[in-house]
Each structure stands twice: as C-alpha cells, then as structure tokens.
Image (cartoon, rainbow over all chains, first blue to last red; front, top):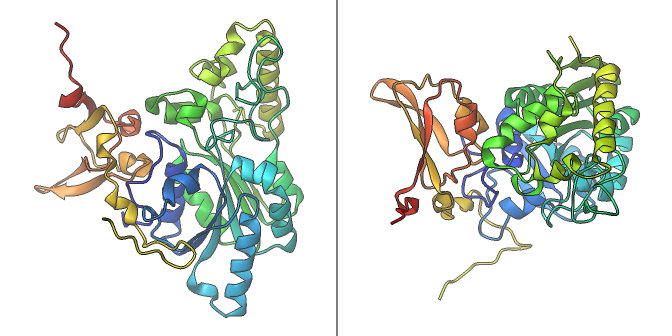
Length: 292
Length: 98
C-alpha cells in the first residue's frame, strides 16, 4: 500500500474518519486534489509542519469547501489539465449539512465535476460534541444536554442523501466505514460520472459517542444492521442498489453501548424517544426496501 | 533553538506527520500470531493509522504492525477474521499491586 495519507496524524485511537479517507485515496490511487473544510480531519492532519497528506491539499474555511473545489475544477478545465486528477472534497457533517450547505448547493447546481465526500460522525466533534443537522434524535450533546428539560436532541437527522438527490446530480451514495471495500467501489464508480457526486460515509467517533476503539467498527456495522443508516446508491436520480439486511436488529442494540444515548434507558421520556428512533428505522427499511 | 521555515500561505512538506511518533499513545499493542495470519489484508484496510501492513517474511505473507505509530486502538483486533491478533499491555503499564 503506497502512502497518500501518512501515519503520525493526531486522530484519536479508533477514529473512523481516517479509515474513510485512506480508503478513498487508495481507490483513486492518489490522483486527487483535496479540498477540506474545517473540522476534525483538518485539525488532525494539517497541523503546521505535521501534514499527513501526500496528495495536493487545500484548507480554506468552514463553509466554502464546495466553492473552493468548484474553483479548482474550473481552473483545471481552463488550463487544459483535465486528466491530472479528480477534485475531491472531504467535509464533516456540520460543514455539509449546516454551515456549508449554501456553497455545496451552488456546486451541485453548477454541476462541477467534483466528488463531495461527507464524513458523517453525527456532531461537531472537533470542538467537543455540539449538535449538528446530522445528529440523530435523542443524542446527548453539549448543546442538547439530556436532563430534566430535554431528553437529548429533539429534531430528526437531516436527510442529506435525499437533498443531494433532489439537486439532480448524477451520483449519490451513502457508505459506512464498517465496509471499506464498499467505499472503494463507490468512489471508483462515482468518478466515472461527469458532474457533481455526493457520498456520505458514516464514521464512528470514539470521544463524542462515548465508545472505545474496539467498538468503533462493530457499532458502525450495527448502525447499518438496524436500518438507522441505510446504505444506498443513486445513479441519475434512480435508486440502483441498497445493502439488504438479514434479520434486522432492534435499535437498542446499537444505542446501548454508546454514552451519548445511555440516558434514554432511564430518562422518563426515554421510552418515547426509543420508540421514535425505532420508527425511523422501520421507515428507512420500508422506504428503501432493506429487509430480505 | 529550532528553526522553522515558513512557506507562502502556510504550505508544508508532504507526509511530514511521520515525524510525530504516535506509538507511545496507547496502553496496549497488537501482537500478530504468524501461524494463524492468513494475510487477508483486513487489518491493513481498516487500520485508521495505516500502520499495519502485510509483508513477505521468510517466504510467508504476514501482517506486521509498525509500533512507531500504532495507537493501540483495537480496530485490527476486532476486524481480524482469523483471530490472529492479540492485544497485550505494554511493559510500562503492567502494574503490580502489593
């Protein structure tokens, strides 16, 4: 395995982000221009004189990774340097669903030839677990603390995959670090399309979720097996592939090992939230026809 | 005194994170049972730090962890299908209670 992302970066032991990043770069054989928004990935990999990147890399601001990538792509096109590599964006879930959704939508709208990868660890983990648009309901974060007044986050997880599909871009998919070969296949498939592509990768966060490194990959797998994180693939707006689930598990199995959900099992309103999360899982299974 | 050359717009050399040896972070480290290892590359694909690699050793392909960078996160242990990886506590953290 040649090196596009070096060891020695500052990620927590068991971090899911770097599994996704390493496999993406490996799938594209390092022929990439990376644009990165502010977030965990930027903090751990681009400290001054401690850069982990072996590929061209640019970090600008929190909100404009999509716009920066669009600029790189337009410049490469204008200079006639089209075959030098793919423009790839790595952005966190906050940068994708909350702060950067404006420039992301603009990039989709102009249909730049960019692969946008959202590394979804379900909160602003870089600043210490604040809720984002992609935080699941019931999660205890520092901005939605579980206690007498509220039982964790009240809203739903924003459906970014559907938002991306609604833009009419050629390729949209979701993936999970529990299945790295699936990430590689999807990345390779995505760059075959001309235009904007979006892949959302579920990445466990050891500190924010309150888990140990040894739980990271099994929990990511459980999120898929409980249908809370459906693995889907859209080509030209049509659903072409889903990861089917054999014997769908109850959501409690996924929620129980995590510190951010432990209050649900003793909070007076916890039962209601658990039922709501199970309902979301059932809806996902029905919508994408996940059960065998 | 440490001299740091500052480039235009904070540009750094590629792959210089290798200067940061993260091997002393963890309390445990993986030990590969070379008899059981089937060189399936699962650990290599999953390792968040890219510090376990399948290499040829005495005519047999086995996974070899790089202890300079391994943070002891247990990911390779959980994904090994052949149970070839064992986690052992470092000598430094073996405390005897007397």
